[in-house]
Length: 613
Image (cartoon, rainbow, N blue to C red; front, side, top):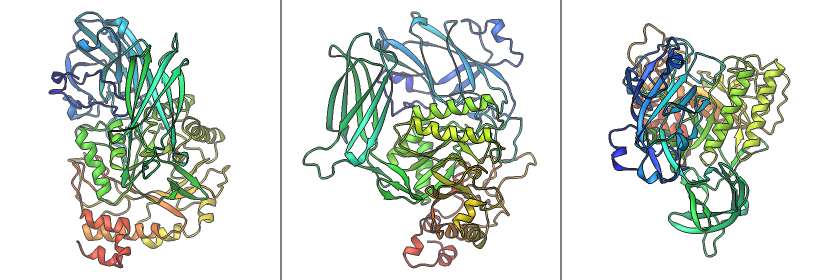
């Protein structure tokens, strides 16, 4: 990308390190902007070049945010418009030009030089249009019309559907909230590359899809390298739109047959795919993958054929000035580093398809991730379609990230409030489970995380008991828990019988809030959110945290836990970090309790609670 294009624009880095073309041109920065509350823009021809929009916005930040230059605000504007001009870089001349959007919430129409390039629905999934035929010499006009109604059939996640704040729901996000960019490809381009590892046979299979069927036979060249050293180069012919290529990774004289990805040793292979026509490259894409395997067997989770105990932290991925858009690449890395520093080996990314660079850095840093679909809050035909499309889009985009080990289509029956007895809602939950398995057989699926579960790989229960003995009593007998409940909601839907093969985990607990620590400004008289009484100081926090964590770790059939949560978010003040990422307590002391290091050293939990390092 040209040097001048990366100066003075936000989020200048490539948004998809797992799918990189050299012809990358970032379109973030200042755009024209308008609210269209009267919905008059279509009739008024606002999409036509020359129609000036009255405001300015900094892309990729939503208008509700301070980072956009227009917020913060919780005002609802169902229709908004964007406009900017661009010139196609010289290095893209003679090629097809793709216009890519990381995410636009929720529905949009895209116009180039006044002509519609395409439309897209779905607030969290990426999309692209071939705009070659719409381009002209010199400056080109790019315009978007976006609709984002307060519609609860949409996968909203933690975006509140009314003005203000409610419970643990926050300011919504509308419009462009991830990077916009151009790419150039030849007459045929690679649509996706999905790599399925097979560590048992020291090989992988790459499924390579093209954006159209080739008119004549082409070749695909795959070059695999590890830490800069060539491992394999394979060339196969390509006559169909989708080609599957098995590749053996065993190299003679190497000490290890393959390098395995896992926490603490996150080894990654680089893969370059070239599409060749008579020896010349038509398209070239760089990606990477990790050799790892995850499965559930007889109630245990196994990673690379070894039992895995997961210590996860719930991470909602909100920032004070930019909401769900990470303000920088460094901000993403900081959150992951804190995840590790607090003694966790993974994160449950809650109610959000995260910025792809989060998963990239999780891959690089060796952090396990659960990928969760944002919830709707009404159950209709549209709800089912929206959930399925979002789930499939999530899997297609992020298939290659070894850090992601589990998909979560539903959370706490949100959007399926009657799933305990409603057969249609139960069918929707089972459909989402089997949909994930059909699209991706390499990962686990927690179908309705929290309670009232249907078919699932994880018996994933949420329990916010505040005392050690109460938590221990809730999980004293697995059969009793799964037959009835751990606390106040049934563990399984009424028609679902657990098999006993599911891995058992407590996937939300804790949620301990401090008095007067971490509150983000005035909350308009609204009560701040935490579970049970707020603790008054660090000693009280550690006493409560140690008690409930020790109780969970003592459950013999439990395979891990997820603590709520990494950061405060607006009125929800139960993070271990403030919204501006300041720790509320001694991080090393927390990590010793969290990892059980104190017990290994023969130090009592009480001693760790009482004394800092």
